[in-house]
Image (cartoon, rainbow, N blue to C red; front, side):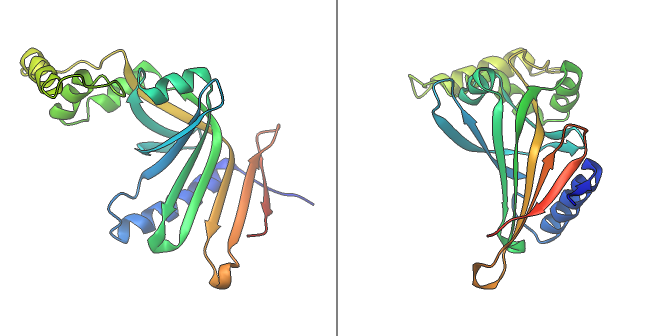
Length: 198
């Protein structure tokens, strides 16, 4: 008989692991590798920061017009990997990315330091800087424009929710006899659980 779980139980385990990582003094406990694939099948990965997680999925923020933003438009299938060496653990997530609501993006943007808010306006993310002073000029331009008062969120900047279809918890064991548990979403909304060979 296949074991079943609720997503809330899986999220609780993830949360417990993340808290242990934070307590360990890890410099970036929420850092995760985000892998995307372009429409012509070329993979790309980079590190982004997890900003929220819940039964819905995993949220990060970025420039929608960046390379990853365009790839997510072309192909929303993604993979995330958390690597926590101190705990000898990894968590892998496979799923689909979708934009969060404007209200959610606005709420998060308002919590960022003002210089980071201005940086979101100034950076033409993933584009070539043609002159070494161009970025500094853009920062100065938007600092002047938004130096006083509230900085509005750019329309081209916001969050993505990765809705998971598969989550794997990996834990190191001696002699590479690692423990691997895989959770997969089922059509009825529950999740199946299985152990796999290392």
